[in-house]
Each structure stands twice: as C-alpha cells, then as structure tokens.
Length: 77
Image (cartoon, rainbow, N blue to C red):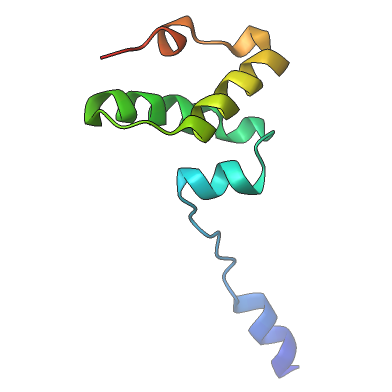
C-alpha cells in the first residue's frame, strides 16, 4: 500500500536540455523546430554560430517544407 502511495505522489520531471544536447539526442524531432528557430535569432544577436544546430534546422525544413520560415533562413546580422 505504501508503495502505491509513493508512486501516485511522485512528480514526473522532464529534464531540460541545451540546444546542442537536443540536436545530438534526436536531430529529426520536429518538436525542437521552434527552439531551433529561436536559437538562430540568438546566434545572430550574440554573433555566435552553431553549425550542427543550423544544419539540423535546415534538415527539418527539408522534411517539412510547409513549416519553413523564410525570415529565419535569411536571418543575418
């Protein structure tokens, strides 16, 4: 009985990943598309560059062309 109570009150914790980790774990996951787009804007603002993340975003656009954001693709500093 005690064991059931512990399981019922245990909170599910979703780990937070960095963008690099998200790309490395599952680069074909469309759920990270918006995060990748935001990351492009962050790279432009901070004048940094992440080839793997950017290629991942372009690959996702290739698989789902209807979700392509031209402003993100053309974004530059």
